[in-house]
Picture 1 (cartoon, rainbow, N blue to C red):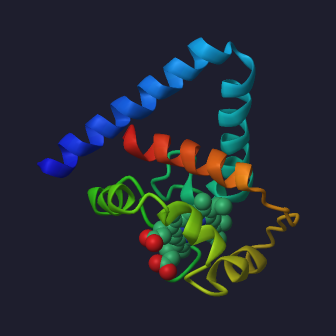
Picture 2: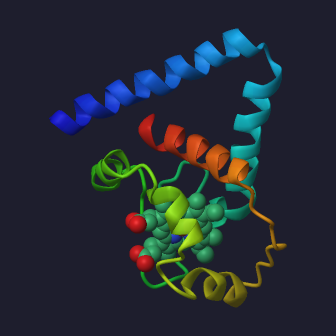
Picture 3: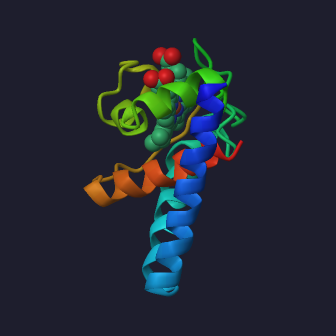
Length: 134
Ligand code: HEC
């Protein structure tokens, strides 16, 4: 109950701050940033996580464990308790070789990417938005 209320509040904050920055900055930077987060997610994550973050991508069931549904309440709660969980899952790779191995075994080649702090911020903002709107 509390988590739902909190999620709604945070969603409101995110939506209103995005709306606010669009109003303040005009079209350029606000759109460019969310576009970068979406692009990174589509190119490097969605083949497993799906564009809806529900674990609906073509490779979602090719690993053990399979790709989790990140829109479930359990993960939303973790995200609200610790907003760094998305970025740390990319940087720290807590599941070792699982992701590179799954990509390799399914013939998916990801070009290497020199992540910037801005990339992490944009990805985090985009994916948090996708998860909390569900
Ligand atoms: C090859 C498929 C695959 C790709 C590509 C992939 N993931 Fe995952 N992801 C998984 C699997 C499988 C798990 C669950 C792993 C586990 O439980 O050890 C997971 C877990 C996660 C979690 C939950 C971590 C937690 O602590 O509960 C997040 C967040 C996440 N991935 C984000 C991303 C992001 C962001 C990208 C792109 C930069 C990405 N993933 C790319 C398969 C993938």
